[in-house]
Image (cartoon, rainbow, N blue to C red; front, side):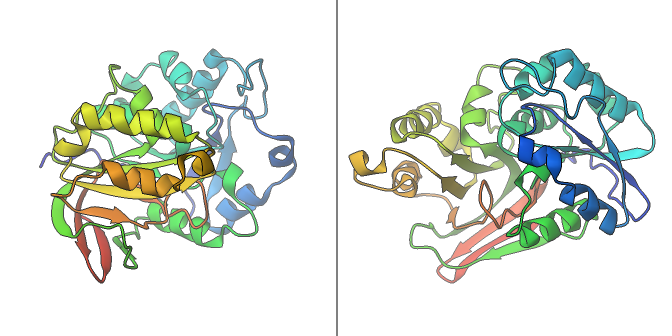
Length: 303
């Protein structure tokens, strides 16, 4: 399997950049500095984008050009070793449209985020660059200690594997492939764009989502199924599906609906804590992994 570009892992004394890649910060986020203290407690220096606290109509963190300018500045800054998106929301694809994407290849650095940031991960995978699907500053709080530690380990190169407990919906089996995916709605949004993932590179597909209606969740799953994405994947990891509305009308939970679309002839791991709840474990996207699902639980191992 082709080796993707792996940015240099962090060490104490390195600098990380916190930038807004999509939506603007909430008022509560503006008042807290826990995220900055957390990063500094890891021995890191912190730079923030000039437009981090900007707000524009549509709940964007400033204009598309301003968000892109902050990212460009941090990519070109030799001191910055990683870019962390403050939050997701909406706007990543608009930001990418305003960027010179060649800079990501010319200056590969760890990019961290999830949810709407799935678009950035898809773009990086199209350029054969690894990235980190992990907690963002906007998601940190009193119950996020495990997520924070998982992010620290990922940035410093200390994550080698994750084990999960048995889950009644998991399908046993073993597979090897490249870990791709993220937020389900953004995976679907990337279809027919330059960052579409055709899953033709022996992939292990990760899916998770939040705040969807059951009919929309069904539509997205049906789109991937009919497009052959689930069949082409070597294995599938089902993360957290949170705050789905319409479950009463459908007379089943979101996770039950997801189960209905999973193929029976390959390993499918349910129960990995990854998504919009805590703990939210950090994962290396674009990395070759092995997925081993047994009746005793699951093992996701990074190569």
